[in-house]
Image 1 (spheres, one colour):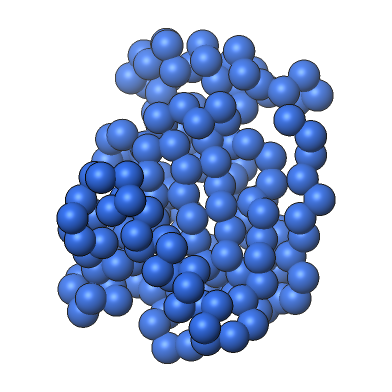
Image 2: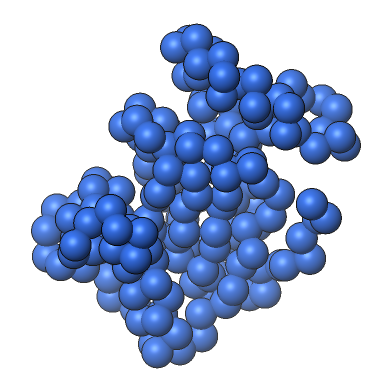
Length: 177
């Protein structure tokens, strides 16, 4: 797959981003791997002024709306850290089939690593209006509903739909925009 030409246009404006597991492999089927993502976002919120407005984590990809002073750099940090932690988790739990697939589907130019967890790029799309923010949040929150996993968006545990429904979510999100 060719490298993406998408770019973060204006920091610190919110951007809609997507991170896809290499070859759409189902990495996020257990709470432990999802927690790696959430812990990374929490770290960025504390240390990098990373602002998370919305998210959904599905078994093989995630969507988020975020902003920071250097969003491209923060997304690189996020993907690098989570990839290392996910690989360590899979090795610790002897998930050889997934590890073999992450090695098999690794891009040829990735010579410094054995595995590739994430597809390249995050396809950032700037959010400049409230209407676009609402549309992207609705898309994110409806993702598990459209897949038939839940009947209501707030029923999906790994989504900010709970935060927006006035329930306690797994991670803090900024709802005032």
